[in-house]
Image (cartoon, rainbow, N blue to C red; front, top):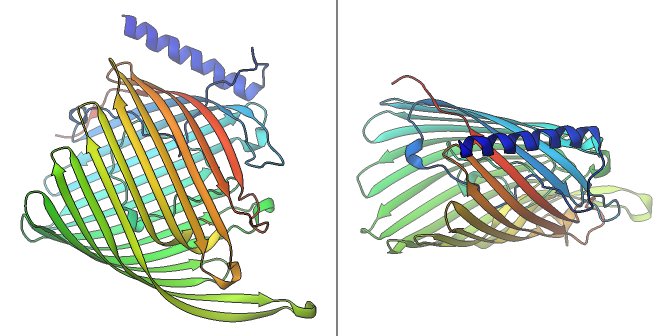
Length: 446
């Protein structure tokens, strides 16, 4: 009875906040209100794995209220505002003997109290299909489609469809705050499980990042990438695994840049103890870049094609420790990547830190920190340098099996020092409070 009353009070409290955010009322005080979570927020609460059926239709709802101290992501036009987010979600999953299919659709509505021009309706759709052809061969096809506006996006209350691997993901550490972004990420895998110790994975993928028309940020570059590769994994013993990866990438950018990247990487993973794992990866990376350099001496604009090659090392590693009440992970990598729409081809170096701890009762705390450094490789963008980072903290409470709440704070910054990169420099603070409710699963099939 107490839980039902608490659930009703929370939902009734948040509903008027959304109407007030759209209607434009007067706040009761000058203190910041609650805020929606962002891509810089710490990981959300996860429901117990055994609570997820194999065949089900899942409906859930997320409501978040927001205060953002820099809606325009500009130091010159700095302005704070309150907002309200409403995000329903529908997940369908069916698992058969040879076929597993999952469809995850999440629209979301973001309403600002005063900044009406930034109200946005976004969509996210993910499809994941796995086909077991024989006892050794299997196929997996995954397609992720996102249409979103701005930097801050809601996080899911639970993960049902596995995420893409890092080798086929566009650069997530470059922020384009004013662009309407359309992202499509497809990947096909064919896995051959030779034995309990040996496996081969052939994969091919296609990614596309497209920006809508933004007058103040016309330099945003559409990006397209085609990649393919082969990964070999061999389990040396119970605690050690050795791997080899060949990765081919072809990247095309809107401003006539085109790059081909070949990488040959070796990996090693070791389980130091039942709760501690360490993995490292590294190898040579060969890049061939075609670009145009424009000169304007004496008002005579001339464009020259330029081709260049280079060989550098790609490196990465991760350390994870899990205890009874704490999970700690730190990772770092250095590789050739896309510039997220602001730059063309770049060398990206990043470090990530995530800590999650279970507190007393049903309380959880999570910390997250990311820092990335991007250096442009094209001659036309010689000297362009971009730094970005996020830091976040969240306090989470599992109110019932189907209801959870999260209070969080996020800080995001990006600096370039290049006046030609319009609105690339930003720093924003956001405080968030969200409630996530999962309706009872509807069984489907067997």
